[in-house]
Amino acid sequence: MKGYSHAVWAAAVIGAQAAGFAIGRYTGPHPRAHTRHSMRVHFTLPDLAGKPRSLDHWPAKVYLINFWAPWCPPCRAEIPLLVQSARADKARGLEVIGIALDRKTKVARFVRAHHIPYPVLLGGERGLEMLAQFGDMQGAIPFSLFVTPHGRILTGQLGAFTRGTLKAAIASAFKRR
Image (tube, rainbow, N blue to C red; front, top):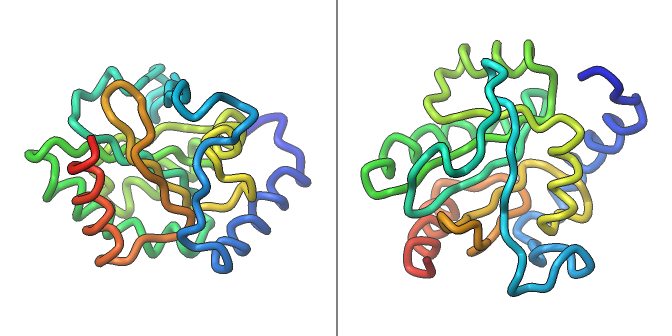
């Protein structure tokens, strides 16, 4: 991504490594960004074909928005679980959306190699800003949010899901919607 400084990427890598110490510690949206009741997830980001996309593009009952990068070991370990859930829970109304924090060519290569069936958007610098806006003050990935169709955050997860934590989080999100 043009314009990215080495310091920004180094901070993201350090944040991803720090996620191992902060798994599950999601404190919610940044308190100075919005009040708790007014916080809504809304964004428009390009997909791998360069087309701008927002949540409105994919109708769902619950969205699982996952911030990740191909170079992130916990993200890579989590991808098969997200792929499985995207396929298994689609009929139930779950839409998994990946927001990648890397260059388009690297992301596209990873998506093809791992047969990722869900939409993947390119976060770029905006993706890094979104992490802080939505409560990931460390800038660590993977970071996931469960969101209603109206953009209300139901819950979040800092660090990679396990099979059990993902299943429980999906069940909880559908109950809370």
